[in-house]
Length: 310
Ligand code: BDR
Ligand code: CA
Image 1 (cartoon, protein in one colour):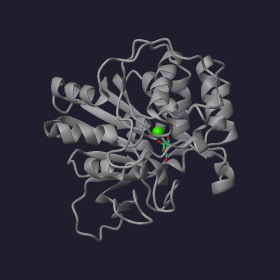
Image 2: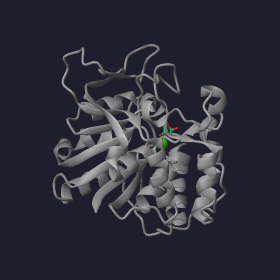
Image 3: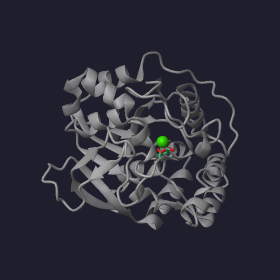
Image 4: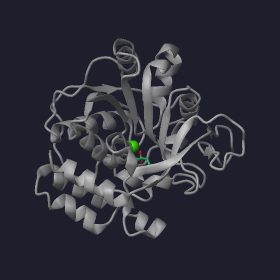
């Protein structure tokens, strides 16, 4: 199986992404590294353990990482995820412990210990942990297989500001470090995730699994981003983060372009914008596989089948 570390700020859609990974024998999840994002760090570390216990994996390693962006104040998204970050399904507080040590040290130590090119980083939140690791230990960048991240937007513009997507907007300086790191990047922007819509039938398919995990996923996907029906006028809400894990399992569900993507860090109205050179007009070197489309039916078929295994 392919070794991955999931860096995350759960988050209902993070939760579904983590469950998809834990349900999939093709992936060996070495650990979860938590970051502040959707909710503050004490809640993302709690939520990550709630998810592991739900999946029957209390032995999973969960690390606490950075509690604020590199240079900015933390922006959270309770208006999207609810006060707990995981509203929509009530689950008990976790009994499993946190690992000792910092998430950034775990990232650095693991990348140094494992065979070069064998570890993939799957990033579902602001990129603060990854950027801190790359800054502190420049030798690890060449050891990463690839970073598959949810973040950014191009034709679909922004969801937290008119120009920027949440994960990149929260910590643009961190995103800039990751996008300039030279590590192979696969980016799942809003252009893709706004096509992964949790229609009523898809939510009911999770519930119809008849399992505790199926019910939890139905509760979360029923709650999360539901307001988007009013916001975007779509039938369902976007299920962002699981696109990254689905890519690792079935890359042919996605299509995109290998292009240059720069992060706006200074703009008055555009901080965290992903300036994607879709038409290749800049002459700048490509640094990211920037996805633009997905097979939504295939994505939900995969997701539902895997969630049913837990
Ligand atoms: C991203 O922001 C968070 O709210 C979600 O978990 C996802 O990672 C979408 O913009
Ligand atoms: Ca997330």
